[in-house]
Length: 210
Image: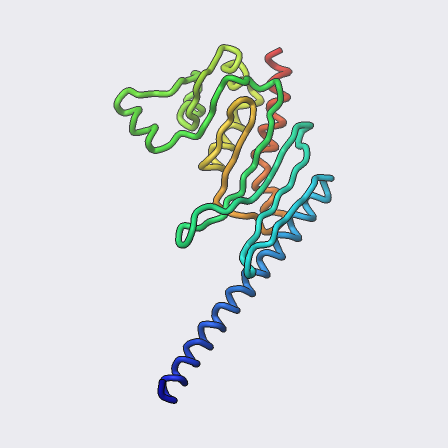
């Protein structure tokens, strides 16, 4: 290589290294902010907290476990995909207790569900237009219908469907997936609030239907 070529290569390499260092620094700052927020959130609730750092300043994974409304809950992050398809999801799992019907399965309605409805393919309905339009319901027994239609449950279920594009309730466990990671306490509150509302509603619904 000539002196000019070496100089150009050195300049390009230096710029690339500087950009990579800047990106790494920003990622590290975001990671530290997330760690502080999650650690503080867990500490104030006496929840356990565990974090694993990522490679070369990339985002690691975090996990909180504790109890919400007297029932177990976990909040964790997970890496998905590779390269351009790489992303991080936050997963919430919360047991709704024995009062919630075990057999019923609930998911949000999708565009695909709406398309199939045009051709007469429908999921089960419970007689409330808002809930039937927002939720994909399966295995709805008479007991499950009574719980879902109770005054305490309607709005929390609708709020859940509005807040999360991906969630399910199966075997009495609510699972939520969000393609984002809360960085502040306020964001953690916002993420968990629809879950807390539903957890509180389950207890109220059980009392009404007993």
